[in-house]
Image (cartoon, rainbow, N blue to C red; front, side, top):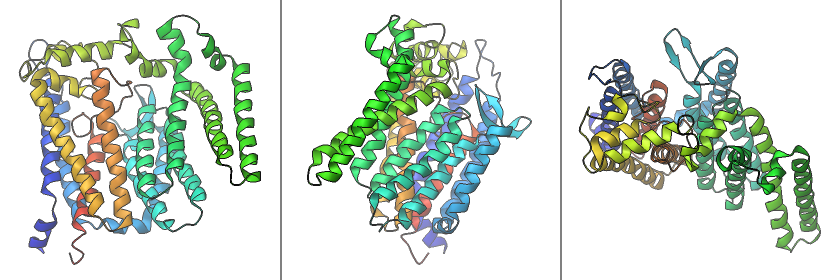
Length: 438
């Protein structure tokens, strides 16, 4: 039993995670140092505690047979939705979002754990419908599953966490064999929705003057005309496809204008749900100097910190941007900036190498997993890890919008750290199940 466990245990994943978590604790400690060289924060102590518990959870999950989750997947998803509703009603506000529950100083962010619950349930659904004849109906039901947690999280509102569900969904549905045109429909529709949502704020905050074409979105009457027109063209295309069954042009006309119509509707709803300052954070990376002391402050200070690191960095505990408190959210959203400033390009490459090893190892697990349920879970985790990494690092470099998405394993926070370590535990469980006699 012991020998088989050691053979099945994924030491590559385990040590990469330990390496990243160690880097995280070191730089969370550094983020608490003030200009006098005194640590005024106890965040690193909490992170050590969460990391220690997380390692135990990760190892226990690697021993647990993930296939047992299949039977209880619907109940797990129902619990996740219930806890999101509870959070929306009884939760407490943190950084403008009602996304935390807890007692006193102890709190959790349920939306982080709901990523795992969503992955398990969507994997269950996609495997149950693996041989379905009607792929369109399968896809529509998958969208419905996606929109439930996303809608509940947007009501908090927590745009950053809600966005993470989309790459998870796209990767899992693609791997599950849903036609790529349906998957691209969600991707394109999502991109257009974001574009239409931020365009009016871009006009007022970045450009500074009226752009005639944007008035289609800012004028409610013109927007309604555009929605009805694109919707009508989509319906006409659909009718043409039904009448001329062999003509694919009508299908693609309906496809394109249908996406535009839905994106216009959802972007209007998004403009009502999201606050102006949240949308400003999404677009300020285009020109942070338009508001250097407001929305652009984060990006400007982050880029200064990264640039000052050069090749080998300024040295551990020698960062100025963090110690003089120029860098906001430095232990959470912008932990990468501190790492870059103090360890330089070499330190960043070490972190990148560990992240890429985890991603490659996850892809290897996907390739070698014969169980569909495990394959889909691993696919969802891959999508989540990749999205968190790209968005957070890009945000710190000033080439991505500020969305409040943490850098997994490094950023301060128990909920995000435990979520990431639970995911790695699931990956190790999936990897070890190739030894079916174990």
